[in-house]
Length: 568
Image (cartoon, rainbow, N blue to C red; front, side, top):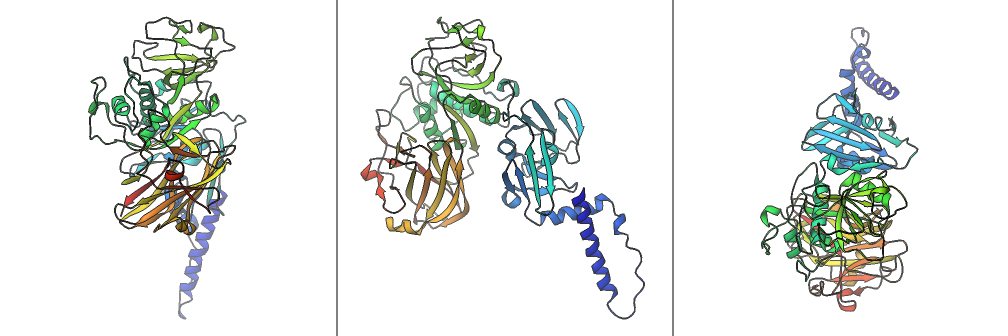
């Protein structure tokens, strides 16, 4: 490699300069012998080269998305390969990337499958064994792989730019699709246990938690409690009232759950008080209705997607003109609105249209996990035609689920979550929530909803808040854009130190194309949300960042903006 030669030349020049300086010190010296550095082997030179590279900022550009070693631990190893954490692969390479049994990494993109083992010098590419110079390693709980050797095995062009200290990987495929024509999470051990909601109206909770369990697999296998979600939330509902997918999101994003099924088992008609969340949900993405490509991408990359349909079946034993019991194939084509939540766990573009009991235009079906027990369908799973009226009309996937030690405190005033929206009849709006620090802590992240796709945002922090005049002293803390609607936790570029008792404000500017009310709010919209508490919040909105309105007073609502802190 030319860059290696250049590094060797620099090293040789440096050593020669040192020798020349030493040999001119004083009048008497021996004749300098032949320099033998050029005879050093790779195992001697490569660590020196890697050390030089690692002392600088290393950047990795994957399809124009850039990562650096400043906070991701990227480094060059002694084989002169750039090693990156496995965590960046899903978004960086737009692939499916998962660790199995703590020792094997499966990377999938389109029809390619690459299997790497910890400390194994051999990888499997579509069942073909190949040698690599830098095996996957595990260090302090993080897995690292050679981005060059992986990317070249899934159709990427890879180069190292020595002058920029940058690795560049570019997808060379002519197709934009990242997934195969059929895919089934069951075959990848990425589906949790099949549940049974019985006669309750809690499909929304079962679907939400089944999707969440899938998002954690195969790395973690947990079973969560639908009883706790449906009975220990901030809504006025019982287990027979039904619910919305936004209710599950609100429960999880406010850290009211999830809790384990064994700690609050289903079917006893009660919930256990005092249980704490065993995971913290920090990001939920929502794909546009009927965007089947985005739905498939989400299933492929992140796991099960919660969605809705109209169920004409009254029970697992009742017949329906829309359900072929023998083939477990369902397709409703009518005007009824959704009344049931399920989880999409795969698809098959070639699933025969003849399997459906109604005439459909073409082949293709989503593979869906139901909550009616294993006696229904194919051990709890059935096939829903792409031509079903409602399938994919709303879609939720859990994309960031973290351990409960990620932050010490959450500050919020929207326990019912995204109930409605507010704005000034234009795509942009400023919103701010004011909180008081409970202890000496560092403000580390801010969370909010993007109510539409391609939302641009800027996050500001106001320290020592006194009144709306304090907003003039806001400090920019983060900015970016969000591809999908959903809830996002945005880490601050630099944590802000807060003193106990200090009032502070977290401000968000958002611009959502085509929206007229882009800011998500909580308010008493119906019977289920009638207990929304407006006394726990101090929120403000502004059209331009100048004049501010107190939303609890002027609009009877709370802003959905949260703050996350870590104790000093």
